[in-house]
Length: 465
Image (tube, rainbow, N blue to C red):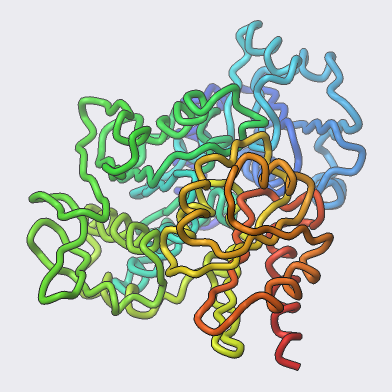
């Protein structure tokens, strides 16, 4: 074993000691497989910590990998066996598993430490960490900040809720910067995270099938602000603005209004808008490849984070001028007969749909619907009334969506995404935008939001044939 690997393992074992995982009798139970569960098993095995895994599903994702590559790991499926939980000294819960599960609650009451993979990452990482959370825009800001860092010559690693599990970022070579996108599910089981720079982009109703109310959901997001460092907050969002900061954490804000000194916003100069820090105009909005006012906010958040991480302004501008956005996030698909077709399938909650509607010019034909996850749709009513000329509704909650919007905007129902595209095409005229922004999850009709967006885009492209 070479010295770099030795140093890495020494750092990790020192961190694991903070969680009590350096003890010879430590027995960790990972609850929930999938990519996160597998990453925890791999990491603990590398550090010679005894680990087992349990999943309520019969054939959970990642099972074959564990059975093939980690044959000494005990695997329990098809339910949560009480005796398995009783044997654990520590429990690491994957984000997809609710902390309200009876066996997890009982273990916590017995004094068993219960946490998530982000806490393991937090105690083992040995370089600056930037974290981004919010109901919408997380992936865009995470990726954009990563591009800024790369243009500045940083060795930067991106992960968390975005693609690569956090623990897989901790390779033999220590990075210059780690950037994590974090969901409320990841944050609610985190207590050790102390991000150098942490951003909360916005909070709107999401995952209301998992949280009792929006306050508990917002409280989970607020955990990203623990410890010292810098907080980057959306001053135009009431729930974000009310979040409590540790006395050691400094505050910087962003929004679309004119910023005060030290904060970020939009300045108007000679009839043109500029992304700005205080009175410093940084870049014209027109130079951004990503469109919509919501993406101006995303860019402002990324600039604020980059400034506080020592990323040069020239590198920031290079990224801003070249970043075209992410798939399924207000992604341009085609212009056909003067009609713009836009794929925003990642809009899996009403807040994301609202951001797209407010950020794009009217008139819009909106394709929406799916699994509402218990969220209310009334907050879309004003934007639909002012921006939308036709609603094309799909999925399980299509009727509830139409009822809660309580609008005079015309609507039609579609059985499939392909039928929705055809109905929108029949109604669209030159100058319209057809926007897929469902305000709902996709699992009632699709494998995931990506498949929904891909089928929408494929149906649009067939219109050209």
